[in-house]
Image (cartoon, rainbow, N blue to C red; front, side):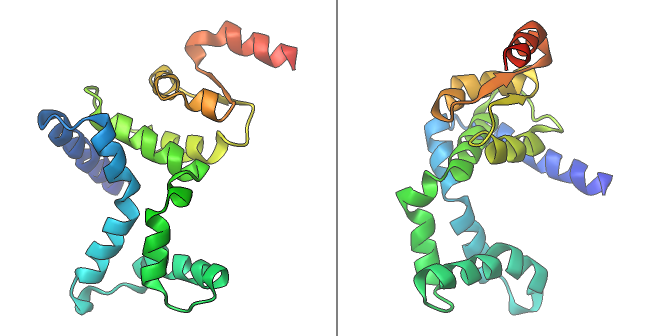
Length: 173
C-alpha cells in the first residue's frame, strides 16, 4: 500500500513539474481539471477489451450511469452523462468546484507535492460547503485564501500557525 501511495505521489509530482516547466497557467490547468472525468472515461473506454476491469468500470462509469438513469430516465446514456459533466451546473457543484481549483493550484505551484495534498483536497472539497471551520496546514490554508474558497463557501480556515485565532474562534462559538 505504501509503495502504491509513493508511486502515485511521484506521478503527481512529475505532472506538476511538467506543467511548471511548460509554463501552464492556473486558468488553463483549471479547465483541464474540470474535464478530467470526461478524459478518464474516454481513456478507459479506448483501451483493449482484454483489460476490462469491472471494479474500475463501476468506479468510473457504472455508478455514475446508474445515478444518471435515475435523473434522466435513460438507461446507458453515456452521451448524456458526458454532456452533464461538461455543464456549468456540474462544474459549479461545490465539491467539483473546490477540487478542481485546489488541484489546478497545486499542479501549477512551484512547490513540490506533499504526501497529504490529495487527501487534503478530498477532505476540504467535501467539508468546506458544510462546515464553519477547517483546520489544515499553512500551505493549504494559503491556497484556499488565494482562491477565495473561504469566502465563496463561508468557511473559516485555520492552521496551527494561527493557533491564537483558532482558539479565539472556538471560544466565541
